[in-house]
Amino acid sequence: MAEALQPKVLLPQWIYLALGAEAIPLLKRGFLPLQPLSVDYAPWLLQPAPQVRTQVSEKEYLAHMEREFGKLPDSLKGLLNFDQFLQQAQSKRREIEAAIRKTSDLQQQAKQPDPSVWLQQSFYSQPYQSLSWQHNHNGYGAIWLAIDRTQLEAQILPVSYRDDQPARYSERLMSAPMDQAPLQQYRLLLQKDQLDKFIDLDGRQQGLLRLPPKALKAALLGAQVSTALKSEFCDFWRMDFRYQRSILAQMVWPTGEYRFGFERL
Image (cartoon, rainbow, N blue to C red; front, side):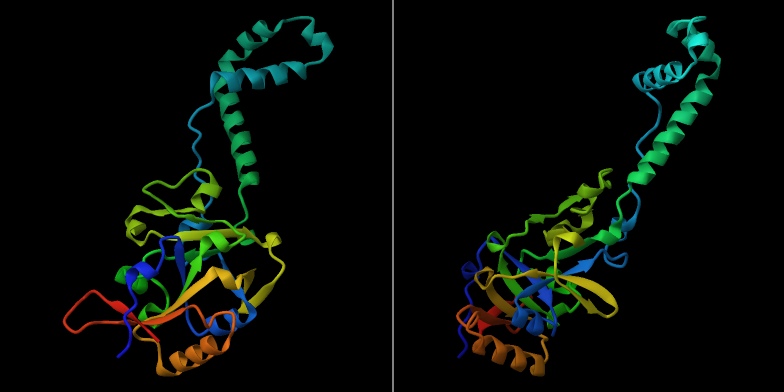
């Protein structure tokens, strides 16, 4: 009879990467995949940052007028002081503020980040949650790799769930809509120039991040992993000295229950 895997064996600091058959070649090479930001997965990551400007402050207006006053030729500066310059411009203040807003908007657009420079990977944190298994691309046919995030060089942080999009793009990369909060995901974000290894999969470039063997703690096979993939993966896991002592288990559904468990393989 197969031995049940006790939930307490899966430690709180572990996070889980859901993969399919690609798990085998990735583990052979010792890498984690990082994907380009996807409009299908998270369209808000590809949107420009929202404009938060509503009006020009008095400080901004005065700073602009001081710069304009400084551009006057000396011959005109001798005819009026700064206060008089402001008084003469007052009738055109609305047009001046509109020009200030336009210049500021153009500067913000120039600063808009380029989504194509980023690579990301998302992780789950609750191996006993059916919603998380259903959410990943391979469903119950996935292989979840349990990773101790404290053993990785790259920083993996919890996703922030909220109703509004942060104005700062760096914060938006680490956030998601509030209705996804039950997933309690983690996210890894790196720019392409922070990696030195890449691979082309399905016409898209993916980054490869080194996965130290000590960081990989377990492999959990979904209940619907095909017989062929299960056989191939188990043979690989048991033959590879880097992983063979780590936990290998598969999801099982007790008859008549919604809550599943895992049995060691």
